[in-house]
Length: 577
Image (tube, rainbow, N blue to C red; front, side):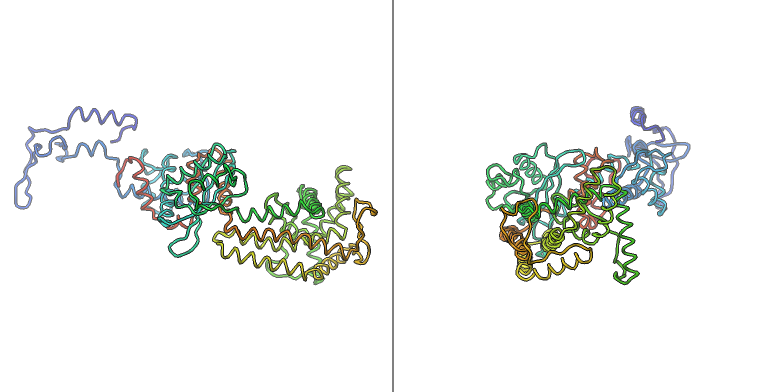
């Protein structure tokens, strides 16, 4: 029917009220069919057919009124093309729509532009999509896109649930704010698959109005109900140390334990490690002052683009000179550009990277601070730079720098290993034993090598090395009120005070089989999917996009026919496959 979509239903109604064209008085010609003379008779078909005398042909009235103009094969081409484009965008975490999707626009958005590329590579697809498709059957509307995305997410989740079966599982839960300042709770399930491997799968993200334990439990129960899971099959809970999670009275842990006493709680191993490091830093003044100095250095040097460029240029000159005189080796991958990194407040592995860069860029940082001390914008800035120069030129600063680098090197390796997606309790316990061994080696036999490394570094950068037999002088305290000890006695004590506190972590860590880093990775993905340009994304669409983006290894094994079938049964479609 070549009528406007706005009046098509009115035209159909008029045709049906008028009844089909059936000229009963017309004398139909006889035709020979298998040696028999046959003549068309309307009585056999009732109101289904109508006849055109001019064309001498019969037509189905209802096919004429309701035929969409495409065959099932053509419809499959159109739908499959949209699915292919959306699957690619979902796996890459890209946006679908553009700011201007009109035909005159030079950029109609990722989805339509990708569909154009696909059509240009396949003549059969090009003949049925976009301009060559019917106006009401292009399958590019935002609502159609959301339905296809939801179909993909449902198929992925169903595949995960089938892999889990009726087996036992644990949950890892954490919450975070998205770009719209909405509290989102991420849920990951951990189970053993049929091959005996530990598997972590993202189950979904749920918007919670508040982060109280009761609200979180209701959200988890709702998610379980959606996917046919039961709290009775739960054997573990993994959270961070927040009170609404681990509270003994009304925390999420306690609420679930009341319903299922076998759902044992596990404090996140990685969080436990970070909390221990924070406790060490706060307890010992020398370590705390050192870390504050490093943070202040990052603010002074790294807080300005001009100073960062100056640092890069100074370091480039030193590398070129070092290569010229043969002090620096050259090989592919060496001597890459580095800059001072700002350490994170909660991610203590970032402190290790900061200290590595600080040691590598030390002389260039001194040059930049000297420049700021002479040419700073004001007296305060110049004074801060001069103060940092004074602190960094002390033997104590260099000693703590190398001590913390050695200490964080061991904890960094442990932290990275614990954050592995397929980590299990057996490997975690073995890693703890290895870390304990390395810490004990440093404590017992690491003093001489550490001191030698510090002395060599000080000699290279013209820093005065303390005589180990001299009396130690503590800054800021009266000599009469401090215990008299030599430098040789003081600095090894600094080393022995720091390391035993880590053993408390090691003992506690034996009780912690897993970490919740997988959930935190989902929040990193959430910030990619829902960014400042897509900050109005609805929660259901956000969940579907995250499932398809995070579980890509499952997504690639989902057949397009399964997605088509899921899309078709979601609601009544214009074409039935």
